[in-house]
Image (cartoon, rainbow, N blue to C red; front, side):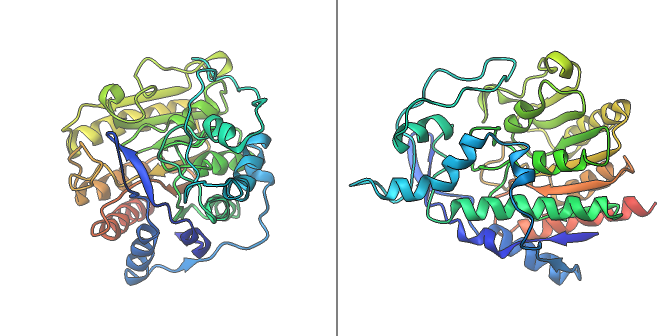
Length: 352
């Protein structure tokens, strides 16, 4: 399996996010990727750097042009405001937005960067700093490099991405995510394959990914995650969300009760795999999160390191070209072992 990681992603260094009414130190730190990359090298994997000339065209096929322009210019405009804080964060959240069918929103009429932050940043977990745009683009390029490797004949490739992506909608950041790396990879795979699936095994529901493809039949979204009734992202990820329009029947959420462990997660994953087989997907993108681990600071699940090996094994059973895209996971001491276990399980099953 080829593995890709761009050091440019390390430049994004968010300082704070809102957690239960308090601004606390941000968990999505550069050390996450550094620990995982180092562990993969120690396990004898070769970690490659994506090429520099991938460009923005593939990103623009997923994300709204106004949103991309906002992200590109946000820091310069924010830092020009007298008295602005050290990071861009919204101070209002407009009610107007996409409905239950996840139809696109209109571009806001307001031109102020303060107003646009309120429109394009969905929560207080996505501060924008001086290098956020460059790091987010580098993460998307890392996912695209893995997708290119799969289109070139690799059975699977892993993209070590950060910031993560699965909470990013077509025109809105959220949950530490700015550009939806897995969605960008899936859209790229559609250049060669007619039907693609996205399997999300992060502890949080990938609300951004779901919203992007909710009305489409060519990309199926299947997610195993914590029941969002009392867990981020709260407003989507329920079992009765099936898709809309052409996409009706192509969205599957498999929420787990808090406290669920390896057995419950793997049972849900078996159902996810069967649904993807029924979709007759020709290729797969997997949003891989390690924040379901029992010792992760955001976890309410009890997945173990061996559980991640078995999750990798189960996902590989689909036997289709696969792009693995890194999402969450915030216990720095465990990330290296978890990624090695997951990829090891996936690789072993792929050879059977």
